[in-house]
Amino acid sequence: MTAIKKHKELIAKIVLSTVTLGISFGLIEIGYRFIDPYRRYQLWEVQQTKDKNLYQYDEKLGWKGVPNAREYHTIWTARVLVEHNRLGFRDIEPEQRTPGKPTVFF
Image 1 (cartoon, rainbow, N blue to C red):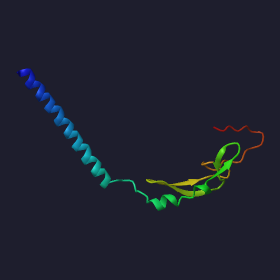
Image 2 (cartoon, one colour; image 1 turned 90 degrees about the vertical axis):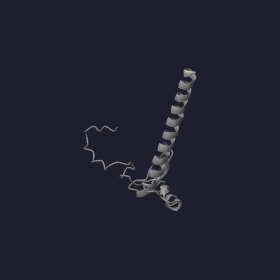
Image 3 (spheres, helix red, strand yellow; image 1 turned 90 degrees about the horizontal axis):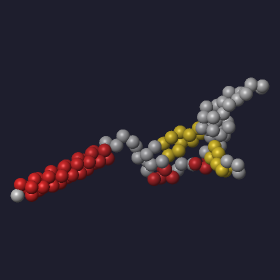
Image 4 (cartoon, rainbow, N blue to C red; image 1 turned 180 degrees about the vertical axis):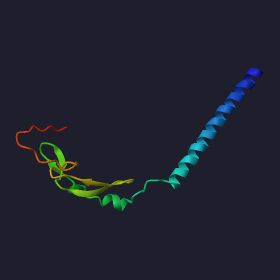
């Protein structure tokens, strides 16, 4: 009789813990949706992104950056400014090479 009672108490504790965790996670999810720190962009804003102005097709590389391009790229949760240098890389403008001095790219 005591073994069955202990077994029922254990099951009750497991069920209570599971329900408590479920309610807690549910409340956290609801709270996060109300106090979301990230702005959500509307569908029309996402579709207005002009990615074709940032990248161009290249026979050797596939796709590469358009030189000197500067535009905002928008997805559902973020808007990022994309800038390419004169070589088409998303990097700072490289310094002019000194003739006769080796250059290393990573």
